[in-house]
Length: 270
Image 1 (cartoon, rainbow, N blue to C red):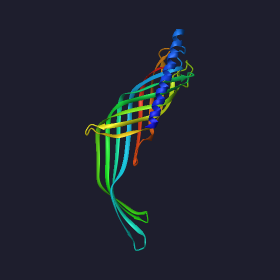
Image 2: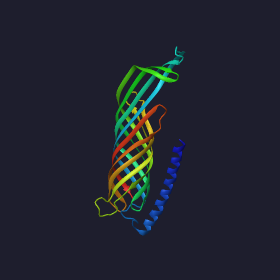
Image 3: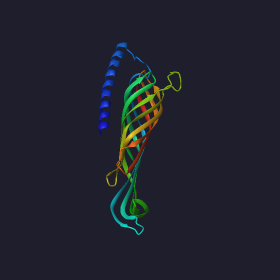
């Protein structure tokens, strides 16, 4: 939570600084009577992306229940401990489509080549969830603190597929690079992007009205697309992005993964 609070403070400070810079630029543009940098990626930068997204998440957990043990010294002088305990394995997954999903960015563009921006986005998703649960009774022989034998007895198994809806959100910082600066080139407006930050999602089933498959963590996002200028300062574009959680916030005994693929349209200033 301390890291998240610091990130919010930095985000707010940067927003104030960028708004101030934009006010100064607008005053200069007004005095000049026209755009200072027509059809170039310089000064303030603002972009709204919206489109169709596919989300996939998974959470796997394992925990142990009641245990008992009996120890004795064998005839060969070695100490043997017989253990018995319960093990519960659970796997939850959620896959869904969302439309429209939004991603809003603001920052600064430099040298008609790169834009540095903060971003926040999210969306609602509708799809399918799955639960898979297995319960075991485990019998183990431990001799001198070394496992000699282990047997698992399956006590129960459950599989279910349920209609679900989910919510997704992200907060991050990234770069958008425009490598083709020649305005006469057909590839002018081509962009590639890289971003990182915090994102998360949770699903809620329509049957039991309970939350499940909650996944959150640090993400990286890659994107590729193209913009077309429609005025001196505004452009429209299309793109494709892929984001993946590379570090998840999970408890001990859990593992999770999460990714989002988006096809988006966008409106950009600067």
